[in-house]
Length: 529
Image (cartoon, rainbow, N blue to C red; front, side, top):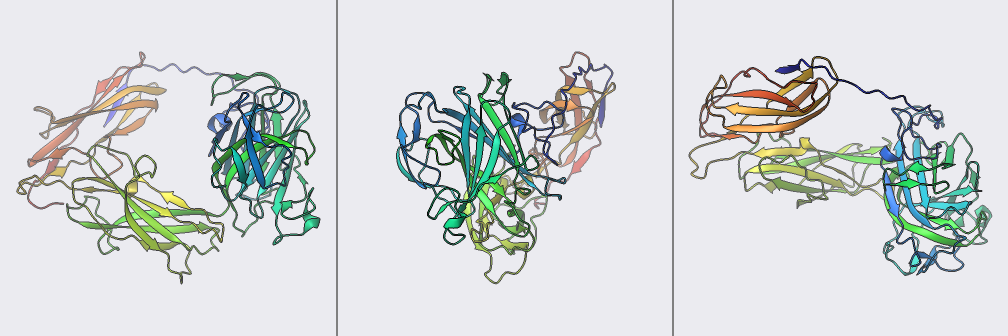
């Protein structure tokens, strides 16, 4: 069914700012010195992919910092509290983001991995000498409230991105990697005379990186407010073109933090820092794809659902990239039960769910992808159930852990009346297309009304409104459209029909009610679907 508005919509158009040159293949505006998109279709910090935010503990005299004498090569450091000296950079926030390019990057091929970095400081002291440390592993016990000794958990191949800004012009960017006795000798060290150490410094040229510090007041859309001259800096680095990620070699980084040096010298004392945040930066990726199954582990749960008391399983297909990697490890399975009418998922954060158990990938596995099946779970009540599968990852190969929780992993457990003599069914979803005759955006709500007849007569038995906004035309559906049926439960045999109405909040549009949708006939009996 379709609704057509006779009114016209007025579109306000604004001129776009001139395009800012970005690194090859990337749409991220990492060299314009601000946080907002200036060219339509691009990204910036306000909509950065996989953005992570780090905030300083305090920006006053109780701020934390590294203790006296801490240098970059020191993994064993001491966190102290006390103010940052006026002539040193007092960091307040940092941002990082990353993405894998689908287009050809600076390396000459597709799939370049881009790292985006940004920092903010409390006071503009002119120069800014900062380092972003990117670790493969997290440092246990280091939190924003930590005071005392900390040993940074460094692994051979960890990254140190140096960012030096002289107070004007563009920043100078560089790259060092962590070297251990297993991966190099003291001759590979940049500044230290002993291992482990940060290795030889690599200047990042304009092909591999870009950066800028704001030369005027810029808007801060994430934290709010504005940043005056010299309080914000950013950088973009093509890690593939810089040689960090190599084809056929797995590497994954899971932690990042920023720190300030007291001068442009690599051996200068470290002072302020913002404690680490978790990231997912990898060329070796993994994913789990799950499908609900019945007790035999091979037959999929039917789209019409199962009866109370059924034993169900889940299957997980673990895929690693590149394809030459053979996954090992295990998959843990979780299941969440929701009340009727919900559309939420078993996301592992808000809705953790009940643990069903863990299945190991066989040690003899030679396949990529590889499929494993969960232990069984017996559903004891009516509702909507969703699975979550968590792959443990493979640290020896650099494959990160991963989790999948999607609407396709959900299924229904069909209701039965308490007496056990009258079966019930959910009615199929309804949907409709709404359009404005003059084009433009829609605004308002769509209301679906269910009638216990084939011609939309009689007293309605259900009504549901869903918001409508955005481009026209637009297809809308009842709220539980992500699963096989709505949460409308009917107990009497007969014909049921839907009617869709559109109510507009746009003064230039008129709402309409569509004609009655064709009847859906349901036969209710004692056999569950």
